[in-house]
Length: 618
Image (tube, rainbow, N blue to C red; front, side, top):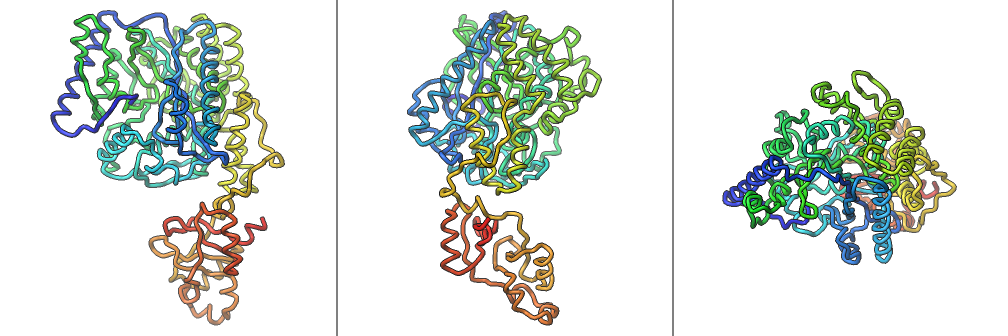
């Protein structure tokens, strides 16, 4: 949505005015294509870097606007979450040392952000999904307080007329109902832009679709969300559902999500892609328009196509078509939106070089690929890569092959050829593509994260594990060594300030519960089978109503239990409870002062965990 001042479309007059300018923009784009006004050379590359802001304990820090104000640099802009910011890099001509230049500017701007963040007791982190994110961070209270985000949130919610139901199934399963588009704030990406020759745009776009799956597979680094192990690149599933304007009752229709890979190969001209988007997705917002784009062309001026850009900004194809004007010249580009941020700037530039190299290294036998390959194979490749990362089996040119085989034997040679063909320095090509090759032979970001998460989870809680992993991500990013060279985390080298721990760090979440009408005999056996000392009692709404302890059960005779006495007759109803974000020391004091060994942990009256005296010993 850029920096436009936007408002929600309110009435027929506003709709008619917006559609008038939108149709004029389409006509103007056709006129520019027919008149050879679209820039053909030189071609340029560019990028957008999204990142997280975290506090000293590596949790999201809700101070993006304060940091942005102190940075005072037009390269920086806001994101929907007030713990995210974005850097817009300057476009550079695709030649010689352009990738090194891009990394130098990115590093310089990130260093500027880091210095300002330090003054605000914050750190900068590059990762697709921040491991320490919790549900409390994705409320509207954490939305960046700027009009366009609230307008978009209201427009999407009004279109759906129901809450968002997020369901992602991987090794673990996430199912939740959420009331805003703030889930989008869980995702940060490294968005790569490549200018495309207008005469070959459609064929280039289809090729970008064909290579998307293999490129994504080597770049995944977001396997975790809210402590659950989901997809290798969970962003793909999460973002698709987080801004879906379709109500569930319409999911059986052929309508696709605003976040999509697409359903078919593209044909015709680039304007036809925009026409398809406009036909599928109604406008959510509007802005002020002064000039008529067609009139501008007739006067010899170049229009910015603001209405078209505004609509395009609310349609999130993973390969998105973009129109822009630079130095008074109009151009077309593909925005690659599926690559996550991080884990280092060197990794990001390597990802970009790999993609750009493939875009320019396409063999002649893959021309007009839409006539040779089935689009569903390409789409299947993309979502398989999102699910399984480097474990994907791709269907490529009529054969099944592993991600490793496809990249090493076919795609890397193709990328080298493409980069040399546009005059990129051989030293830079060797440097960055070697990073990709080494990653194939070792592990990518999601593999590193999962391996460490599983190992740490054997001795740590999910919450502490997430904090440790995030701290290690930060430390390794600061050295800027590529992910393929990272060592595994060693527990004896972990240093966390335990005086800042919450209840959530230590509490148990894998707990059994019973209902007040359940037989005490069943409960006694469950406690014996599972070696449980404390059994929470919940009602039909999942709210906590009591607690049974092993002491309560031991004090009753077998005869009484066998008679069928219910849980309600024995349970303790007057309970001392605690919140998951209370200090761990608070829990310790409560247990000691009330001479109890267990505290139920509640969130809005509902049970989310248990903390016991044994947890302190552990």
